[in-house]
Each structure stands twice: as structure tokens, then as C-alpha cells.
Length: 301
Image (cartoon, rainbow, N blue to C red; front, side, top):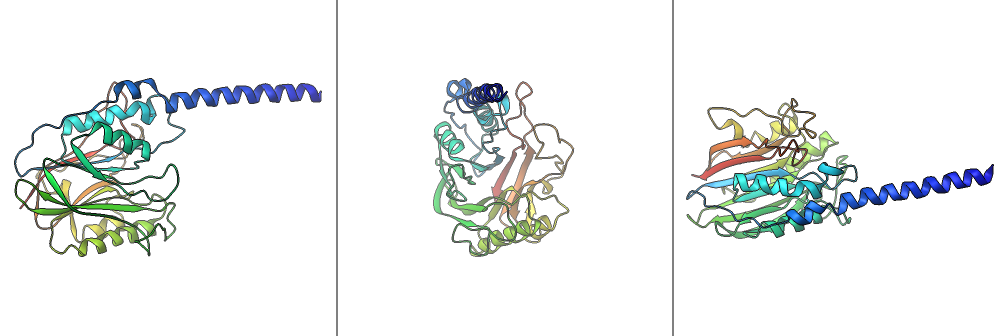
């Protein structure tokens, strides 16, 4: 009886290992990832127009197999970028795999990134910007904690959370502005409120420079996090005659009726909103991410 049990367990272990190897092969080496990998050429933009995009990429997860795998979806993200033609992009949940792919496929852009910790699958909030349109003046990153100059977390945050920023000069006008990109904690309300407070404190250091904050706030519009930001910043989607009301996190199309949690905030002076949209494109029924990106056309005033 013991021998039979050992044989059954051995067979089960072999089958499990085979299944895991097969899933890993699909997950890590999806053939289309290599076939589709390409470079895009950004098209012309109107003078003095700042086209901005915020995009949560969805982290690398072993549960995302088949068409949910990053290695299948990567090209769909790039298709969205081609359609929207942004000059500045803020990504969230970017691992080293994401970042390497994006750097390869967006050759007209330079970028900055700092990962939130030292783990092999750590995430960052990179900012990409077109070098033909903007010149980098300064850059930096900080952690949303009581010690923002070092890798750290506080207030019950599930992970270390980071914010990256760039000061850019618009080549056409010479005007400077600041772009912040962040991802607030998904567990702790206290971490979200205090974390966005750290971002606002940092922005104060740049004085009257026009500034914008983009990212996944993990907070709805009735939250204290949203209210604390909108004391000092404007939600870009409400600066137009026709308001865009749409979810952003949609859980692969399963949660299309929930409230928005991703935002583009602009300073109350210095920036005008010309257009705003939530990018809801799918490709043969496949969602590029579990979040919809935001896209906007802005001008410095």
C-alpha cells in the first residue's frame, strides 16, 4: 500500500512539474511577444500642445496566462500609445521586463525610473518623454513614507510606494513644467492619504512651476485622498464642458461600472485642458491591461 501511495505521489509530482513548466513557457516565452516586438515612430503634434498619457501596465503575475499575460498584451499597450500619440507617458506597475520592452519599442522617448525596492520583480513608476519635444531639466524619485529619501514604507502600506518626477522644458516655447507619476497603496487608506501628502509637499518645493500628478491613486472621488489632492489641484477631466465619466480599473472587463481610481491632476494655474479621454480600446476582445489608460491634450498658459 505504501509503495502504491509513493508511486501515485511521484506521478502527481511529475504531472504538476510538467504543468508548471508548460504554464511557465506560455507565461515567459509567449511566441507573439518576440514576433510583435517592434519600434514605433511618434507622429507630429501641434505646437505648444502637451499630449499626456497615464497607463497602469498590470504587474507581472503568474496568474496571468494566455491573453492576460504581459507577453501577449505588450503589443496592445504599444498600439494604444500609437493611437494616442502622447509626448509624455506615466506608467505604473512597471517591472524590469515592462521597462526593457518599452525602452525598446519607444525609441523617440527618453525616460526615468526608480524601483520601489530591491526585489527581482520590483515595480516603478517611469516617466517617458519625447526628446524632440522636451528637454530634461531635472529628475528625481522619493518614497511615500516618513523617510522619503530612502526605500521605506509607513502607515500600514502593503508595499514600499514610490513617486518619480521630471522637470521638462517645452522646446517650442522654453516654458518649464513638472510631471509627477505615482501609485498609491491599495490596502491602507492612511497610507494613501499620507502618501499623497508627501507628493504635495514635494511639489511645494518647485514653487509656481505648472505641475501635474498622474497615476493610480487606488481611491475614488468620495475619498479623503481625492479630496486632499483637489484642495490644491484640478482633476483634468472636469475642466471641459463635457465631463468624462468612466471606470479606469475594470478587472479585465469584469468591473466596468465601478468608480474611477486613476487620475490626471493639474495645477490650478499655468495649464489648460484641451481634451481628455479614457482609452477603452480592446483588440479582438482582449484588454491591454486591467486598467484603462487616461489620455489628455494640455497647453501651458
